[in-house]
Amino acid sequence: METFKNIKKVSILFFIVIGILHIGSSLFIANHMAMKSAMIINKTLDIPFAITGLIYGLSSLRLSLAIEEKPHRILDAVLLGTILVIFIGLILINLLVPDIQ
Image (cartoon, rainbow, N blue to C red; front, side, top):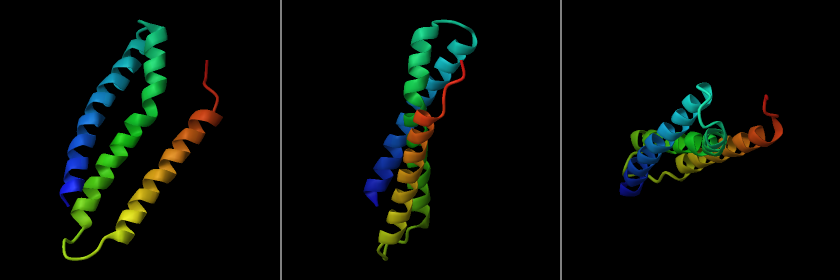
């Protein structure tokens, strides 16, 4: 149980830092400032931003649903499968959907 509490603490830290950078780069793009570097940061951090949010949310869900006396293999497999499916979906969307210029 301590492992999931530590994962939750680290993932919220990463979510906040990556979120600030991602939203800041979006604001730079919207205001036409430092366009090249802002576009690189924005396109690079979209998937890590979503994944850290998912890890934080699903680790919080796991901590709230888990009962300490029982094994949690099915719950862990479902949550891990959810993260993997969404991660693969995000990668496919990023690669297959063309950018609007």
